[in-house]
Length: 143
Image 1 (cartoon, one colour):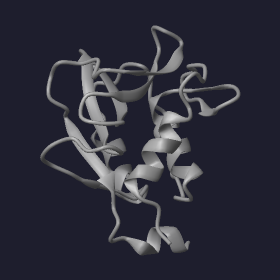
Image 2 (spheres, rainbow, N blue to C red; image 1 turned 30 degrees about the vertical axis):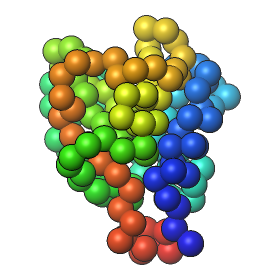
Image 3 (cartoon, rainbow, N blue to C red; image 1 turned 45 degrees about the horizontal axis):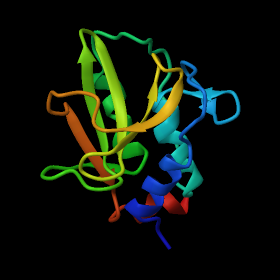
């Protein structure tokens, strides 16, 4: 049985309160936004491929966006749904991932607050990308 977007949203929500740590991949030692998305996917049984070599600020991230389909996510459009992953740009050369808990609530790893938090969408600009679980790609869960 494939996980549902609701399972993913619940897994991400359960990580609220974890410490922030750049390149963090473990709830006990800390998570960054990539770690949050990856760990929530892993918690629902999706095999995860993490990117390497990124910093808090990156001029170009196109190569890393290619990992979304490899991690069971497909491009999405339209209204934001619970379980969607949004790529935002809160500042110059700064990119950030958030997991939607609804149209106006998100969980994300907040470097400034030093924690994974739940809050309204913290960025006003429209997202650069939006993904959701690729329910058609069963092979991802059969590895």
